[in-house]
Image (cartoon, rainbow, N blue to C red):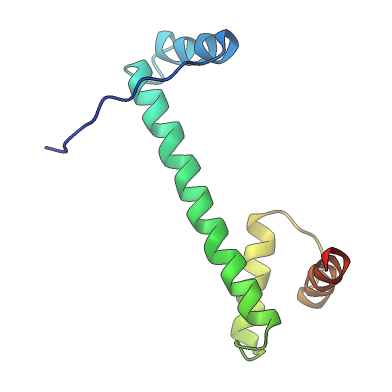
Length: 102
């Protein structure tokens, strides 16, 4: 059995009502289950985002040689985050945004 830890948190009333609604509808068994699932999804998205950022950074820095497989990875990333355009168009946008920040 997984060890659990109690964490207290205060939520705005609107969010608390949404959580309660999901339990009442039977989508989740308890409020804890809603919060655990939401937290897990949030952390997974952040982890995936970090891997995407690292890949793009390495690609732009020239650490990843441009190839059909790297282009395919970029296309898949763009599809997952709903960016339109060819790999080259997307990478040019990213390059421009990096120079605008510098």
